[in-house]
Image 1: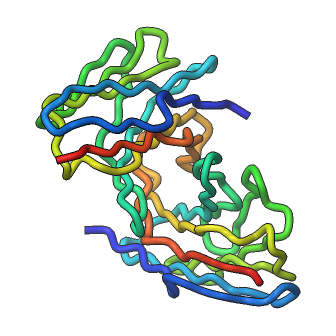
Image 2: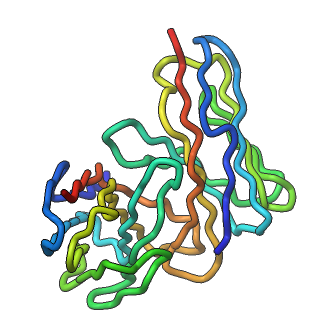
Length: 115
Length: 112
């Protein structure tokens, strides 16, 4: 079974802090994704990475950056946290495979509160 | 940005009832995925439908992909309390990287 592990289930930070969310997958997957999930808005893609050191913006990248130094690890960085970044953050990974039908394997999420 | 609309957004039913939820778009997708998400956990894939008109069954769950590959439905027969959860759909497009677009999801509550 694929295992996607997010470093924290709950995190409380203050406005202006630099916040790191870590995600590790154990299945040698090429693609990794960061989403945020908010009531009434569903899952929205922040950034994704298709290889080590490669990254692409998703639909809502503003205020975020990412790092992929090793294949198994994908980090989401809030450069200067703001209250509107309070949300549930979900990491996912996929194996490229053939076609575009590979399932997204999700971690259990980090519920981040910015005070 | 392609949008996926799901309806209803909320559904509360009694155990044993049947239900259908919908995932609609004005765009064509190469495939569509259905997930189930329980509180405090990440979404887990239930099924992927690829061919227009395709029907897939997973025990009491029946998934259908529209002929034009723009919409899909999920039908649950004899719902059970264990079916409670959020059901987001996600559309995929050719273009690499396995990117998908998620709908908001239908929040289902099955009352014993």
